[in-house]
Length: 597
Image 1 (cartoon, helix red, strand yellow):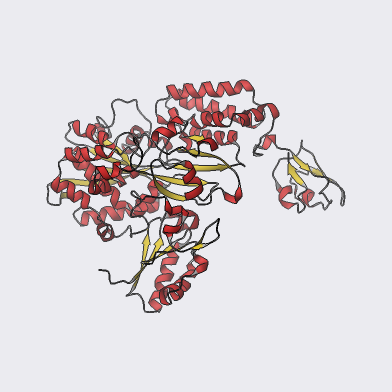
Image 2 (cartoon, one colour):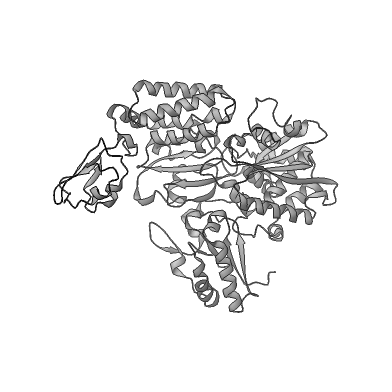
């Protein structure tokens, strides 16, 4: 039994750290100490709660009060009002964007209602830097069960029967992958955790490592026992300093408690984990490129076979899974394959973690059962589109995925349905787009990232994607032709068919899906020389509305290139041949006299 009657949980993920959540913790502790309450109330820095849009978050337990957008100076009010007087601080409660009602219990919030947290089960509940708190929530029991009551074959069968598929993007059976690694005989094998997470807008793996690092360490040890490996490696990008710090603390604590190292649980099983750092190369999310990077070589993919299960790190059998895949393993072992396989769809079992971003009210990290529809994610969990704008599309699977339109909103989210709709699951990034987004320029944006991140080893990816990017640029500038649309499609299909690795094979997906779903928008850029969304600068024309213009000269005074002419109290004119479309005139005009045509 805890000696504390109340706990104040403060979000300690990267986003909330940037918003001074550490100062909130310090201020809460100072206030409690000043009031003589340190013996009865405990302040805990946790991992990410997921509701990033409303951070920093302070959650009061056991009454489950959820305070949002908390500032360091709010600590005094929380202690004096809630802790001492038992009165909720209304101004810090979440307000429903539709009903405008203040909600104190997170279980009643639309953001959390349809979530099922398996991978994120401990994030926001425990101090990730205290192994005792992980153990208190059944931590390392799965490893103990595996080492003392199961054979490696039984563990692999349990994982296979669960139906879990890899969450890194490919969706390959986790249990089958482990089985292949076990069957390959070698004096040494390796377990590798892919924590590279290179998708723009993705922060799933980072948040798990920051909020619950021991779940990944435990799962890697279970995998090591199953395939016959004694060494684990976590490949993590150096841009994740907080995740790295917490991983180091977790590894040291696990060693000190005999949960990593030699003779774990007195069973004779040895397993230890080390960190390897990446420099943020997107292509190193591909497992062979990742392995080469860990070996100190250039991060380039190689032709498969041989697969890493046969010849991977240092030419030894190697099993590679991503963070999310590993994080679910302890729960699968403890609760059983039947429990996990009862969640989700026929061919996509369990849950999926998504990073929900873009033009949406509730930006954050969510975990939902496979089969949840896009409509539920966007309009119920995500709270709908910002500023009352109209939904236009959602890019799933990061820059390698596809953009789905309104007609896909009732598509159940799983590996096969997303592929059938023209996209992919990917690692889980979701970027929501509204009516103000231009789909031609969005495709160009994703291609720009791919061109920059291509390792350059194969010509289809190195050269083909650059040509695609150039064609999209011409269309955005109003210089494209209808024949260019055929070129875009044909070249995209060739790149998909002939590229060496998954980066090139999926890079044309945004182009193809956006052409399929928004073809008229591409045609408008070419035939009408207009951008329907008003985003492509070279297709814009700034015009003065004579009825609204009062001749105040404010626009002319801020124009950096003197493109606006006119005298005071007379209608002004904009010279389109000089105008650089910077928007300064629109921002300055108080009479809505300037518009984009």
